Image (cartoon, rainbow over all chains, first blue to last red):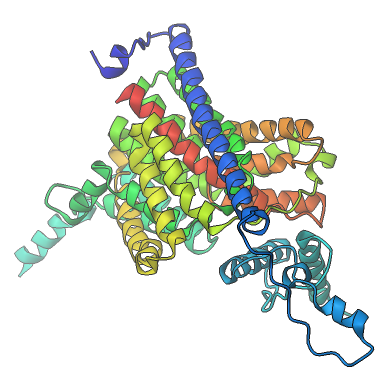
Length: 157
Length: 370
């Protein structure tokens, strides 16, 4: 007796005799695949939340020092308002998406890939992607670059 | 001198050449044409096509015991190459989009429907249980997984199944769009998804360890695939073993790809390949890809409804694996509906989830049939 028969799976010779065992394998198989991936989904969600809490902790924890303020450059007398503005923490001035160099490279690669996928063959690839100080979403910016590239490749005249 | 010349002529392959060999040589040339001229999966179809060519030149017997391809084939037969390929795939894959949006795991699971639907179809056509399981895994759209499972369950079908799997993977941009268009409305296709959150390095390092523990404990039969995939990814993300990561991504991956694809191509000898079974496998393979795509898109539609229109159902089709081709298809179809739509990163989530999903499905089938 072969292993799958030992597992209680007996396949008959006619299609009708194969429906039930076939369905059994399908239900068990899809069930296990969903169960494993749902389990991973929950674990990753927890890890994500735990990571987010840890990231917040240093700035709000009782034993941690308050975030240091950027040192305001020396200002001439009478420019108090200006000095207040320049003393904002650097994190508030920087773009929302903080990323290390590698992530920035990956982001540039993804934007370049998206533009390449969206433009006809032969279009020169983007050679420079700059982060812009804007409140707009990254995708909107990527879209603008794509439109700009498409405009450049249109026949003129 | 004439005797020597006659001996050479009699010993040439022409004397043994059959119509089947000629046909297979023609098929190998078509594969080489698709790979070199049309650029369809050239890294795989070139060595597969050439392996097919080598195997169908009579007399040479490169796949017979003692010859080069016979020894190289042992890596396929013993299930060594596919996990090594997974090591390289893991080292090249960024699981960030999946970690940023873990819900896309569900799309990767739904797209495995093609595997089990095709399994049932193969049973109806009279294939045995292990053979049907091997044919069904074509729906995973994952060449190494298909080869791994088939080499263990139905080694006699390895040639047709590998050729079908890789051919359909190359044809994903042709197979998937009509199904995606048929199952979605213009409004659904035009949905612009929210930007993904940034993923920390710690999350990226923890991810492969968690996946290995979870999958290994639940489906140990899938561990050689999932474990190597995750090891490759850990090499990449840890940042402390760049040399190993680069080797896994480049030298090792390229060497194993040549050995695997060449020997898989060489299993397609005319005597074993040109059979009605092969035709059945080709048809079932297409069914597998179609149903897998539909499964992912339909769950994507459900997520679209449940999320109040925040999920673009097109990303579901990427759950069939075929990294990154299927994700690119989602991007292209989505952008046709809305030029401001950039789905690539969103589709990479289900795409890499599909790789894990198909490896788990292979583990389930191994657990039942091995």
